[in-house]
Length: 276
Image (cartoon, rainbow, N blue to C red):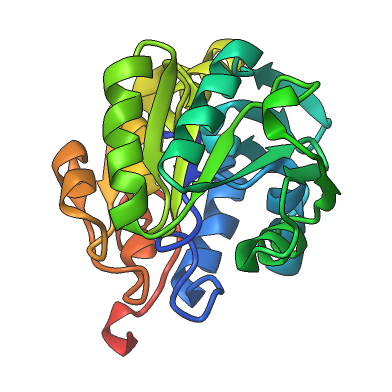
């Protein structure tokens, strides 16, 4: 008899990670219980696959995870290193995205496999993004002449810069790209229809898991797709209003054992929440 939930997927920042950048003690107990039950664990993030592997290693999360990187555009089974899905953006669309960003004065970074492709390596976010995701920086003269089809285009800037860009791209390219904010500084574009929710579908179709046996946790705009796709979507108490609206359940915050409080209802582990 399979467990009620055969796949549980987690956003990282603001969800699986608490304010210290680690997992809460109850969450670690829940991970043990999920593995004992035979439930697969997915990390779903805007990060590239190398960055997810690096973070999972630092957090000692194990080597049997499902990794949904680039906002769901690449899905890898870490246990076998099998790439289950990859959804690139067409190069003509990428060129338009970059041209539009330039018109708005918004900086662009393109993560691709193990590289971070940029025009200006001196930008304050470039080294941070590369180091945090185990990427090698590659500088090119003009990103519009990119020679590979990327799975994500990353726009960097304060909201007052990126919001007009978001509005224009939604109006003119909304049928070709999916746009979502992953942080106050990051607006991300993937191919149309590709998001964390589509990564859930990609994996479940490959493994024969019905969507009603999937649980997801998230807090931000790029989590809305998977919160809506899963049988049970759980928004964190610290999440944005749009994530809470998309979810079936709202739990406590990422600093208040919000994940373990939900998982304790479906998996066999004990934790004293009164001590939180």
